Image (tube, rainbow, N blue to C red):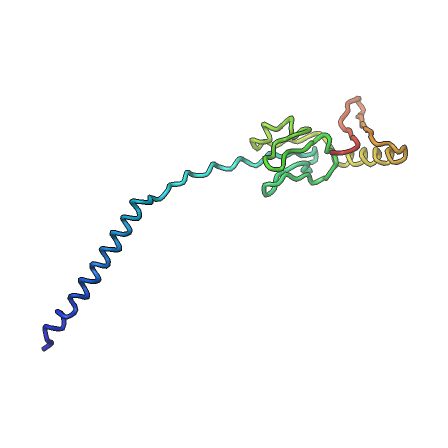
Amino acid sequence: MVPVTAGRERVHLVVLGFLAYVALLALGVYTLALHPPRIQPAPPPPPPPRGGLYAADGTPLALTLEGKRLHPLGRSASQLLGFGERASGRGLEGLERDLNASLSEGRSYTLTLEPFVQALAERALWRGLKESRADYGSAVVMDAEGRLPRRGQRPPL
């Protein structure tokens, strides 16, 4: 038979453990009452990605990737396309400014511009400026009906 006194000797340890548990629980409730958790409002949803500008053949002229506005063709047609603020993306010049509201809503546009013809016009313009030692110039490409589908300006933006 097991002596009955063995359980009685541990009663004070159980009571002491219970009192420590109650004291820590009370301390936690007191701390929460003094410093309640702050519920943070949900962050506003991110704006839709800015719409793109594309050439007639589908070549991207201006698009947003990883939050940055890119112009894959560099300075080609930069007077026409324009530019925007780096921080907000708001258009400041050219089509970026003129179409700012709809580009900001994610709408994309396909232009009649043809990158190959644009490159030829700009190359001819740069060659002419170099030969004449001029600082500024413009080039215009007319189609058979007399419309002006292409233009180039120097210096680019």
